[in-house]
Image 1 (cartoon, rainbow, N blue to C red):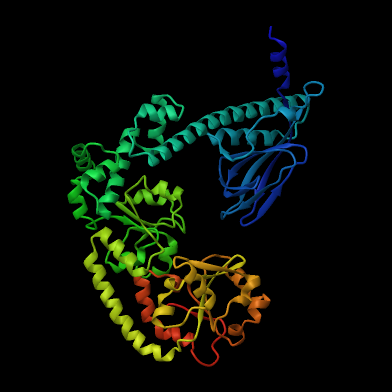
Image 2: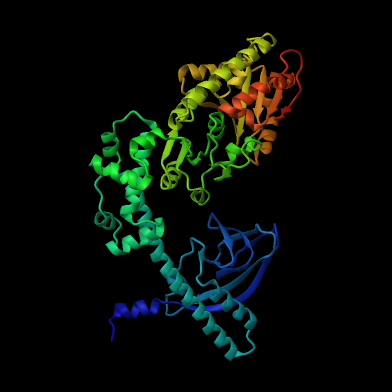
Amino acid sequence: MGNASDENTRNQFPLFVLEEVEKVCVLAKDTRRFRAESSFSFMAVADGQGKLWLQENAEQIAKGACWMVEPATFCEIANTGQKELRLYRLLFRTVERSKGNKGGETFRFRFDHVFNMKPAHRVLVDCQALLRRWPAEDDIEQFKMQIAFQQLLCFLFEQTRTVDAEENSAAAIERSIAYLHDHYADELTVQQLAKQANLGVRQYTRLFKRTTGKSPIDYLTTYRINRSKEELLIGGELLHTISRNSGFKDTHYFNRRFKQIVGLPPKQYACSRGCDTKIVTPHYVGDMLALGVKPIGALDISLDSLREIASSIKSIGDNQVELARIEPLQPDLIVASDFMVSSEFSVISRLAPVIVVPWDERPFERLQRIARVLGKEAEANQWLERYELKKKVVQKRVRPLVAPEITAAVLRIDNGKVWLHAPRFFPTVYEVLGFSAPSLLVNHVQQDEHIRRVPIDFARFADLQADKLIVIRGREQQFQEWFDELQRTKGWKNHEAVRRGQVHVLEHRWASYEAITLEWQLDQVDRLLSYLPTTGVGRSCSIVKSS
């Protein structure tokens, strides 16, 4: 016989009563909201796909996705597919077991996420059976249906308990991988890593391999080799220093393992860089194409304006890298920018050596840095000579047409703000054509030569003094909405450039200062000047597109 504490614990477990079963259909491009004031809800997707907003979190849902909703909680579902999104919805409540003890107060379940049942078929069949029997014809059928519902809930509880345990273990492995990335140069053992993850060695090794596809030691060795590749490509360090920095205390062992994994000794690898190398670059497509190197993958934000010459380059995401798109490409090298957040770097550094080239460099210095990594110094020098010759020809032709005292402000628009970028980001406007930067921008640059941009609230737009306003059309879907909002402000309407029709909208490609795009801009200068007249009244909100 149990003690009083055990008895109280047993009495606290609630009873559940099914109140309603329904099948919900959300039409394509439609949205539905649900809320049950005093009932719990269980929902399961039977077919279709969509997006769920649950407790301020948004998640994609498809067949087999399930979730619980507490009483008086909103959930919103949008159909993002081409056919109906069909769901089962079960409403139930807890009942009081003893005086002063309501089941709803002790009910424990995860309400903060969407989970996928395995097998999904089991849950959907049970929901369908309950729907067919609802409402019950008599008390016996009602009793049978309640038992069937209890069995379904029991299955759900068991599944989520397993999911919780797996998620905790998976999180421990991810933390362990992050630790390994930060301390790969230290002496690490599987026993040490497993202990930090609070897992047994066998369980840790099994979960690690399931997560990464490699054993901990193989993963660590590959990661160290990739980091050594980065130092070899950048150059400037002695081999024993690179070996030590990469976590190999013995240079001879480093040489042997490097050759086993890469197929070449370290020094030979450094000399062969750029030859038949499969390269992924999130942001530097234009610089690499100018060097005669065609990457195999890049972000859409870099490819959008280069589709005619980069059609065979695979997308690795829109403006953030996606591991699922990079992994099948099996790159030998990733040339990235410092725009990456640490989580992105952690993801891609698992796949290949990563060379991080600072974005905020003068374009020609950046081109030469990338060229050194790829062994393309000669190609970079040839491109720079060609660009400088073409630039001088263009300057000689257009400088007499542009008075040096004319100021031009190049604007990027975001939600509630106008951004003035430093002149170094727009060399065609300021160095080739010879327009002057606004005094507001010049003052900030004088105070900090490394400043990237200066923000101006829409309400303070009148503070910007410039003869011309050049607006770069953003890729964001909300760009036109933001631009319309700016144009409704008093500061915009009363701005001298606006009143004289000196407002010009340029496509997004004019914001890029990669090598191949800067050369393209030189070829477009005559067309650009036709939209940026230096005398008289210009065309209000004219748009310059690529030819």
